[in-house]
Image 1 (cartoon, rainbow, N blue to C red):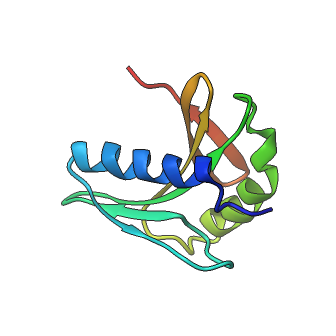
Image 2 (spheres, rainbow, N blue to C red):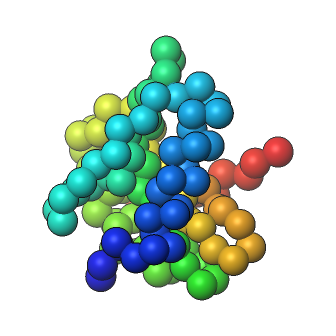
Image 3 (spheres, rainbow, N blue to C red):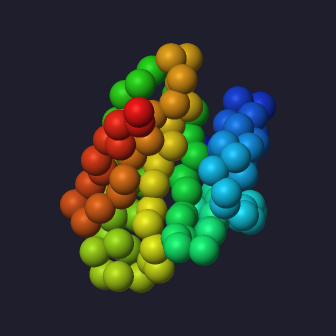
Length: 108
């Protein structure tokens, strides 16, 4: 599946803007075989982000990526926290990738 659509590029730039507003520095990852779309860090945290777009709020469209990343998290191959941000017509849903799957992060 190609992730270089206009919607996915816009989602990545929205994520970069949001992270900068929260005090993070960001670096965009490139390449066909990349694991993360963005790496973000501040004084306390390192954050690996997977940015996806969907026509619905359903995370099932990202099942393969979640399995791949959760295996890396389980083997402690990733330094810091890993999140999947799913942009959809209703806004954005955030998920924390943990060993075994993903947990929805509720925002205040």
